[in-house]
Amino acid sequence: MGRYFGTDGIRGRFGDDWMTEAFAFRLAFALARYIRSKASTGATGSIVLGRDTRASGLLLERALQAGFEKAGLSVVFLGVVPTPAVAMAVLEHSASMGIALTASHNPASDNGIKLFNQRGEKYSVADEAELEDLIDQVSDAGDTEYLPSASTLTEYTGADFYQRALLSNFPSESLKGVRGMKIVLDCANGATYQTAPSVLNALGADLVLIGVNPDGENINSAVGSECPDLLAKTVLAEGAALGIAHDGDGDRLVVCDERGSIVDGDALLGVFALSALRRQSLAANTLVVTVQSNLGLDHTVLAAGGCVERVSVGDRNVAEKMRSIGAHLGGESSGHILFSNLCPTGDGLLAALSLLEVLEYEGRTLSELQAEVQLFPQVTQNLRVKEKIPLEDLPNLQKAIQEVEAELAQNGRLLIRYSGTEAKLRILIEAESTKLADQLMQIIVTEACISLSIP
Image (cartoon, rainbow, N blue to C red; front, side, top):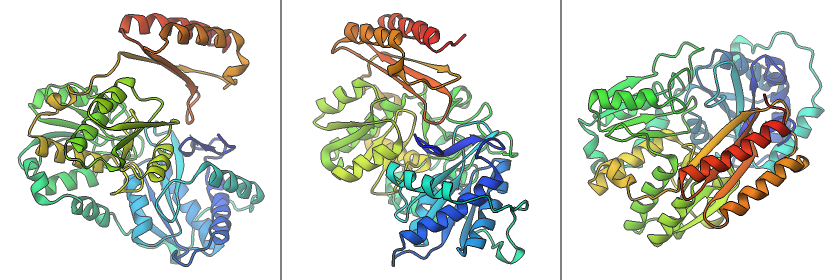
């Protein structure tokens, strides 16, 4: 990770460190320099800017606008929209850059800045390193009021184009089964609270809504993809055919089947891959996932005649690999699912529509489809840390890791890494049985707590 950028943009607690209006104002100058240094005849020099429902988003939005105004660049406002709408808007407006103000699934006290290039793609690590150098070169302008002039506060353009673009990808016949289908939809009081209901209502779905009353402080609060238990309970209580949950910025999808069971993210990727293989439409005959995904997914796809490619954690890495090999389907177990032929970045609502299309084509329930994906037993643990000490500098933990890996051999795996967006150590173990995975997890957790002084 860099000085400012983590695994998915810049993120932090609003008011602390660099997640401030002053930093946003300064960042605008750095971004303006970067855009001019990469000037292309195909780009307009404008910025498209969207945000989620956090109260701090409006403050950061105005500070960025003030900075861009002084730097001589224009801004196209999208208002509250899902992050993938920003990526699509870059292409729609031939803009030089897209900015989404969001901390994704984090609490309302946090905020963040995600950047997209003129192709609607997330910037590479090398691009971010260049941007960080430019940020450091911009001195504090000394402003205390980070507000643009009234003359440059343009009307929001809205996200109608985003909704139209989504629906245009699906012939009406492919989604005819949605009409009258009871669907529980949880928008996390976040960026999809208007767009997702609007799109599904247009298809004639019978919606039961959760998390569609944002107040600036309740995003991701006991709702959304990070808290799917309410979704599952509501699906059962309502007798719904499907439950759909998004995270705060709408780039993730978590679903619940008709039995009230939350579908594992890897199982969902497997459902998409198997359906595409049956239709002979899996581009490059390959599904791209991260090292976090379950080994059972590989076995399932390989048995069906497909291939699986793995990359480092992060949907940006998935997207880069997909582009390099010509694949169109990829994602993470966390719910980031990419259909790169339809959108340059992960899109939770697009993934939901794609799932509805799969259900229509297959003529089976989600519980029946996910049963075809045989996953290995997997346990995970997240430990909050005070300091991200390099794991290689912790000899006793390294010894424990080696012992566990030797025990697993070829019949499982251990993945241990620091989160790129939070002060957490993430541990994942897959084994032939849950009992063995739990035993091995205890070995790693015990030594990690000692080595990192975690109480």
